[in-house]
Image (cartoon, rainbow, N blue to C red; front, side, top):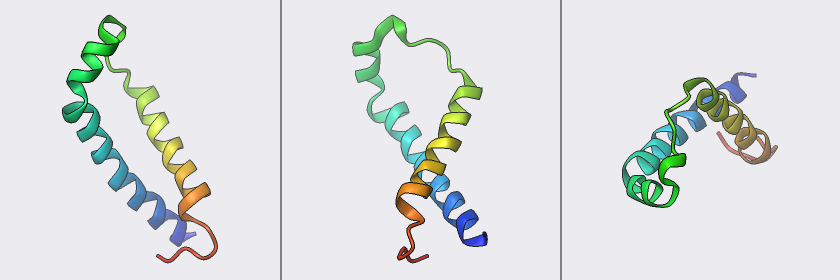
Length: 70
C-alpha cells in the first residue's frame, strides 16, 4: 500500500505543475484565441476532482504494473 501512495503522490507532484505550466503559460494565448468566450471562471472542485482521478488512472493503468520499478 505504501508503494501505491508513493507512486500516487509522485505522479501528482509531477503532473499538476507541468499541466499548470502548460495551460497557464505556454498554451494560454492559444486557448484564448480558440475557445474565447467559452472559457469561464475556474471551478476549483471539478478541477481538483479531475486531477485526483486522472492521477489515479495513470497509477492504475501505467505506473503500477507488476514490473514497474519504484
